[in-house]
Image (tube, rainbow, N blue to C red; front, side, top):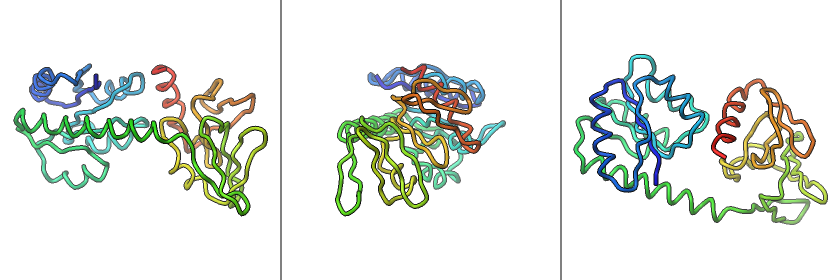
Length: 232
């Protein structure tokens, strides 16, 4: 079952989404919100696959709200303002529904979201290793073996057993190769595998007994780890 929530400052608009979702067998609309602060807290504490999100709301623009989320569900915008369509797709929205929208149009958007979620799931199943250049050779690194990734000037050090490897690339480059649900950048110099974190605080994570600092500009890391730990 695909878990969804909806955010809109208009209760009647939420009722429409609720009615439409009730007709779609693969959707579970778990919660609706008129308050974005309450929605943000819910998203930090619960797994959500699809977010139905209005754009023009009194407290915060829906686009700004979505960009500010640490863990981002896939999003379908539901709004009366077509002027935001281009910006909506710039944040990889699955679809953009202009109010008032009919059930058939809503259903089409939900099928697009379902197909995209299935694609993401298949990609994650396939991605269990990466290849990096070590000296003059190309080396396969199994993701499950990575304990820590550290930036060292122009190189990065990948901590695996029996010994770490050095490769000439940036932390950003390797981050793009890694599945975001499994690895988290916590500092300008460190990426950590989430499943190997032994404990964490607002300023540090511990992996294999090693303390790794959380950078001051990565202030969403703690909330994201809280969210992941509650999902687990």
